Image (cartoon, one colour):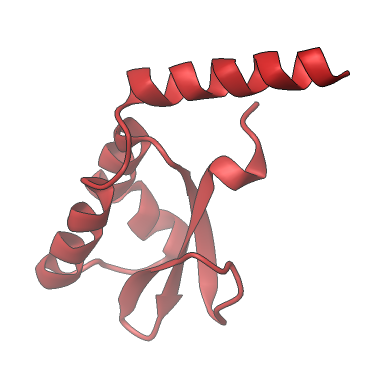
Length: 91
């Protein structure tokens, strides 16, 4: 299980879906892991279903641009393993 801090909230406001870094925007929300593979699946339709909306092409392009700023899965896995090792050493 991944920590909540590795999740990114998306929120539907009106007919637009946007990234909610604070997690406090009003509206119907859904979470994706901070991994490109999760975002790729989400943007293929799962987010639309979770948020009960249709993501228009212009809005999808904005979300895909955000996705490109995320680490690849392999890099994210290395960071998670390092984090877990550090937490174990502190215990």
